[in-house]
Length: 166
Image (tube, rainbow, N blue to C red):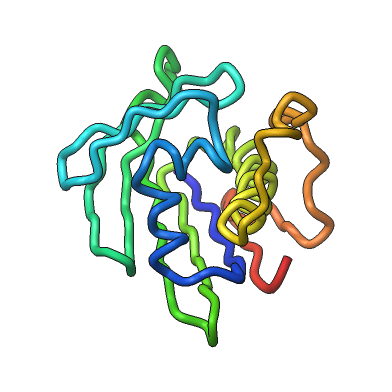
């Protein structure tokens, strides 16, 4: 199993960013077309993203500092619901937030796809949490077939890591 990790600085308070991780309205502002969230330990985490049914559970919910969910794709043999783990850690950064994301337990063959997806969707989170209404451009949104960011690396046992500002 592999890992992908990244960080992003967001011009919004940790409370605002946190709300985008635990409410359906917040989640849909940056990722997915449908969300059914119950943000308590053991509560369901279901987000439909570009035709993929992401399913898991909330494992940790520590407002407004940390959210951990299990993650997988309904109907997938190599990445079934709840088989990987996504950790969101929020740190106050001046008047904004540093968001660290670590996705562990990924099948090695899916790291590149997830690196592209996280780069795309975290950039959207950065915009949405900063106050940009992305619904108007959602119809023009490209699915996960995006070019990998120039500074993303995949290697060393399938691990990928991206740090710095976007």
